[in-house]
Image (tube, rainbow, N blue to C red; front, side, top):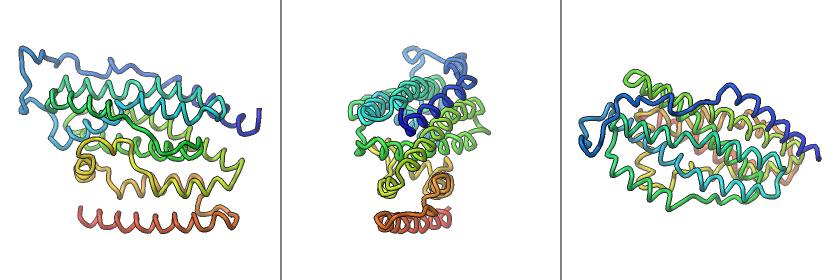
Length: 289
């Protein structure tokens, strides 16, 4: 076993240890006592407990999470030639992620937030459309998943704060999901660091992936307008992405401080220009708020 394979296996074993005390069942978090039959008691907009904006934020998260089969198949394909522990991690990750979409879907049904027929139609279209990453290199995909897992964690925690006053039960659900995302982010963050330690020239790939990052839900209907609502009402937009995701990850990997070979200088300059653009957009967002 190579040094890199040993490092990834150590990270996977650490993940298994950390998740032992976090295992949870979604059935224990849901308010089944408020559920009603939609045939005998048809849905009406007035029955919801959340604002339309908060409903849209939770729905957007659910529509992203239900693409789990596509996420899993993409990761399995990309990691086919990677260290075996990466493939084992994908299996564990899939088991842990499986509850996320389900708990959010059932919560929305029980609480009668949002039109269930319209949402069912959206679910079918999103799953049918699927998701396919443009990255086939295992390292590039891990850079992407690190960003995605941390961004999702931040989104869930910020949304939990936004709904805590009106729906404490939903806040608990969101924070529980965020705990899973925290550990997934931690694994990928440290796996990327291990890959860089094994070959610092991989920073070229990292500098190219970060500026192209988009959340995996970007293909769902009205995604751009959904993100505007989430930014203004649920506490997650470009400003939060800059400070709570990009800044954190770049510091963790020491990207801007790494002593690099000449081949890496130009990609890092491109990354610097991207970071400057994000900074301008984040400042504009703060002023508008």
